[in-house]
Length: 441
Ligand code: PLP
Image (tube, rainbow, N blue to C red; front, side, top):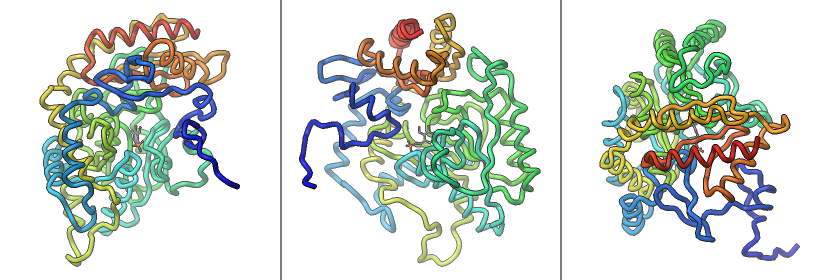
């Protein structure tokens, strides 16, 4: 069959995590971006309520980041990631080491959050094996967790639609219960008071398998994609104490929470916890070039620095690990975060975001509002008892009728504006959402 080219057809692109047919029947296209806004071809400025996908923490098209990427592209377009290096990636690693908690002072790079997660799981297995504990192969994730879409990530993840058609996945994975129980926690601001004891479920799972068989526990400090679920007060501390007691690695998936979303470089700082590994991505480059990584503790790196010196210590890596353009974007983004005091700014605005979003409590069909740091989940009652119809309608109408971009998951709205947002933008987001929530009730 002869193929015909139709330049304007939307058909050929299979869009990720998208209702393709609905999109193609009524596209939501953006053609530019600056600061707090996306720009459309018909000249509209669409307020970005979710930092793209929780990644554009410093706002769109920051000139320092744009300039750094342009310069890097013209200087060193690509450097081989294996057996060769370039100065920027060492500089970035040293900067991240200084930002990271405790002795997490070595960094392995990838391009996406999903790759970072699979990297962390593999490093955990390799570490235990190198220490003569190759029997530690099991992982424990959590219900409603999101760790990307690789086979490792969906196995430890706990969002059923992302798992159900993909067969057996990784074997040997258990899941902690979700930390979210609406009856006990609804309309909490920040970390809910109830629920620390849910961490004790870990002891039960460990007891079933024996600690000697468990490699690691992986959680998002604040579960993001499932709808922004802050950890109950004391919960993460208990996970750390239990894992430490049993020689089990604690992996924090900070793909959303790192680089300011919770008012600190890492959520680990907010909670005063030193995990064994931190996976990060998104905000690292302000979303401008794909880049992710895993920070690991000194001992985990040192354990690998044995054996023949001419051979790789870890048989793992990606063509684009430490890519020069991504590295340049990351260094520039870190400059901007520090120079503009954006992590502190997030801390300053946390109470305002919480109070402003919680004022939607009496809007029709609002079931819960969960603000923490510069993010907030808003659960809505489904329309006509059909999950997701109302959420979709709000996302679509927001874009076409209210000049607002917002990410939704089923009937949960996720507000996570760039950290440059001020009171005016936060209130605009609330007002637009109030109108949309009423209109779709
Ligand atoms: N982990 C968390 C907590 C995430 O929120 C995401 C993406 O939203 C990922 C992992 C996967 O990242 P990516 O989409 O870059 O693969």
